[in-house]
Every structure is written in C-alpha cells, then in structure tokens.
Image (cartoon, rainbow, N blue to C red; front, side):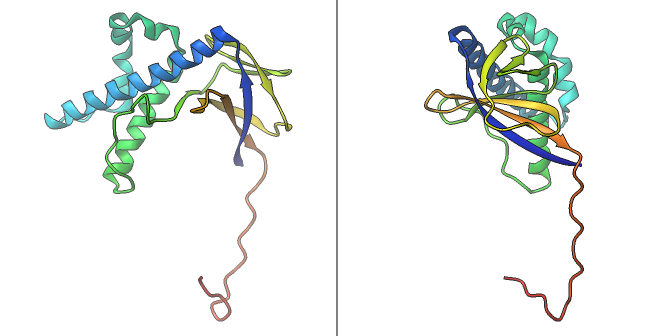
Length: 181
C-alpha cells in the first residue's frame, strides 16, 4: 500500500469562500486554544492528550457558538496535529509548538471523512459542492482532503489516496562497490 496526494484548484462561490476562510480561522483558534491549555497543564505537571482536548470541544462550542459552523472532525484533527507536534518535540525531532498567526501561517484545514468526489466538484461537509478542476485522474481510494488557501487568495484541495501498489523491493547492498555521497 502506498499513499499519494493529488492537488487540485478549487473555485468556490463567495459563500463557500467565506466558509473556507471561517474553517481556516477555526482551525487556527482551536490549535492556539489547545496549545495554551496544554502549556497551562504542563506547568502544573499534567499532560493532556488529543482525546482529552477533544472531550472539551462540546463545552467550547457552547462558549463559542461559531465553532458549530465547522465540521467537528476537522477540529478534532487539528487537536491530533497539535498532539503530534508535542510528541515530535519531546522526541527532539522538532521545535516546541508555536501559536498560529493569522498573517504568518498557511491557512488550511483537514477533512478526514464524509467528503465526496463528484464530477467536476468536491462535496465538503458544511461547505457544499465546490467547483474543482481535476487535471488528472485520481487513482486509489480517497482517505482525506486538505483544503488550503494561498496568500494570493486561491483555493486548493489536496486529496490523499491509498493506492494498491507495493513498494519496490530494495536491492541488496554490495559493500565493496557501494559508496555514499
């Protein structure tokens, strides 16, 4: 099995573009909220997992009703991304997670399920059918979509698919003839 991503241009209408921007803003808000809460709990000697944070989302949605406008799985995926960032930091594989800035970070959000690839359109939960230019055939089983917005205001969708292609077998190394460059 192999994973491959295909990137396509999206052409949302004005309402859909606003929803995508809201979803990106909610992702940033949830990431920063989770990072703040994790830092606070770490100072007290407690560790919070992505599941602990996800269990707090319903109460957070009551406090901030605009979070209900966004697909809940996208918010949960954001918390998993934060958890991965902390894991990588503690394994000394990355720097300490930083707060996301509206002006510096790439705007995107993840759609892990309940999306559909239609003829010339992508169906994304709570956003609707978005006109999409599919410039190549998608080969494999779609697993998730990441919707992003460039600094110039263009929208894109990266579709992650699982392909039934085995990785090639590695050739055996000949110690006498192999060199590293």
